[in-house]
Length: 501
Image 1 (cartoon, rainbow, N blue to C red):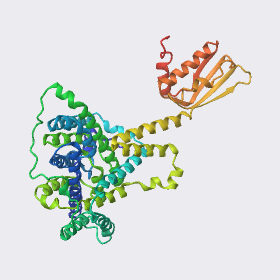
Image 2: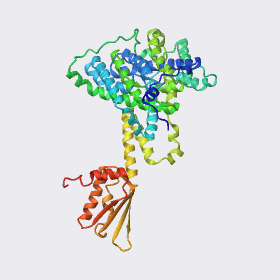
Image 3: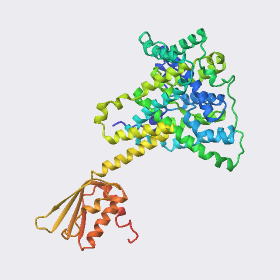
Image 4: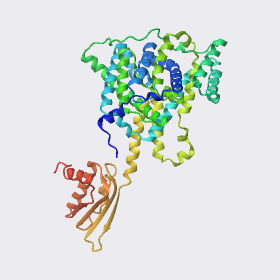
């Protein structure tokens, strides 16, 4: 066994990127992927700004600062963080009722909460998210990405439809010619050229809102420094922090699985907080990991922080230096990109008849609940919580049936041994009391727990109740076979769980 010193562990956890892998080919892939992500960020950031009730520049500034900062301090390479719909929904009431200053203050406080939660180890809770919830999360994400494109395909001029179909065809077939340039970038460029060359009157990025013409300036929010302000923004900031961390950690786990690499979830949690604090200082609306743009980045071959950094930098360059041209980019080009992302993200294997036939019904139920709640609420965090709670209930019901009691009476009829097998906890121990024959058993009763384990106070209370029922009839109970943890718990709590002792 190899034992690492604390300094070695720290170095391993926070090691710098290995620059030897940054070959010209890798840099080209990372930068081009970052450019595609930046183009895809613009309309979404503007849309989320509208949801939050703020100027489009606020969402674009947030996407810029989030991407740049998280590329330096985050724990998951190639993951994109920017302004998101989930965060917009959380802060929208505060912005609408009290103004931008209070929204920015809530973003900064939410970032502080995220740093604290990250330092306290909230990322370790990810181990309690089962695979069926993760599959539901991925499928719901794909559905939400597709649903977000539907408004761009309804009530629009007819040329939009052939443009979208053409964009999809380009992205499917162009990689067969070459993979040197990302197919989405080629598709966006060609569709934009066709739109401008033919003078097609179709919705463009500029129709979503005006792009900023200068960089954001740091400053503090214009709110009173009083307890009343803190009391007002704290609930929004806490909800902001929890939703942001949930989406970011789930996205990081998804990227881990896709790239077969490991990320530092604690560092990512703290990094999200730092990025949101910086974003608030620059007047942005805050954000978290963007799943759709992250999928674009990863599927284009990006694997390092450079793509994330470039996405933020290119975003501002496109807005400030090339704003008039970017504004003329057809929305159909970006819709095609996001549709292909949604199709590629969905776990089609999870719906295959052969998979559903083999999968336990409880696992399928958990996946369906996760998808249904996410689609109904448009909130991935709520869906993950609902799916995890469903999984816990399914697990508890399954394990509760694994506790069995078998009686063996001595030939002379003077002693009966009850062999208890399985896991004893609140769900399985409730019926334990009713599996003994108190009236007809002999005076000497042995309860053998060699093949059982006591997990909680409910099980100890059940054993106390059994002993009490036998004692009322003048019969003696002996408990044997306890393993060490069970013996410790039983010895600590036995006879102490009711007021009569």
